[in-house]
Image (cartoon, rainbow, N blue to C red; front, side, top):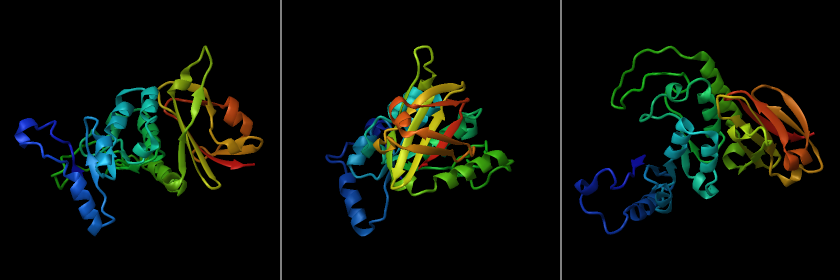
Length: 272
């Protein structure tokens, strides 16, 4: 991984700016010899799109991290309105060597909601050493030792289950799309919901996350035209609960969901 922060933090101390951006020369030259080599930029200051155009395969999605940590679900949703070609080249994460441990940055169930989000979004997914175990001590990268910490077995089980459920080709090579959600004049808690879907052949998955510490209700509108005129079974791969819904309802009026704080549905959708 290469840092591509640019001149912003260095100013004149970095010397004169090159006449041309050297990544446009370096990246093709290296890939001509090692075609599988991947360039990942840890970049800020809104340089992500520019670096993608210069040839970087992926850029850290620090904006998504910041919005998930400090802002609300609507802010996260707005970030995900970006063009899909941009999103597919972002690295999603909720913990790395530069950030606080996820257990402190995303407390009280929020970590699980955020983990489900990053593992079901397009792009690359970065999972940090000790994240699954719920470690709390953030170590400098140059230390080769760490204090002994107890493993959060419940959290480790959750991550094991999540990795198993998302280790499917549909989440890597399928077609991703955002879903719309709606509420009622006297209840707009639907704005707390994050929702999107994946499809590849006969495989279909639907994700609904309540990204807030209060219960949320809403109607989820799934954009698959082939839903209409058929009955569908929605199987929540986490809870084991199963629901049957008409495709017309799912596509047009939206089907009703209610989720507690930081809770999620990860539905496998199959024709009945």
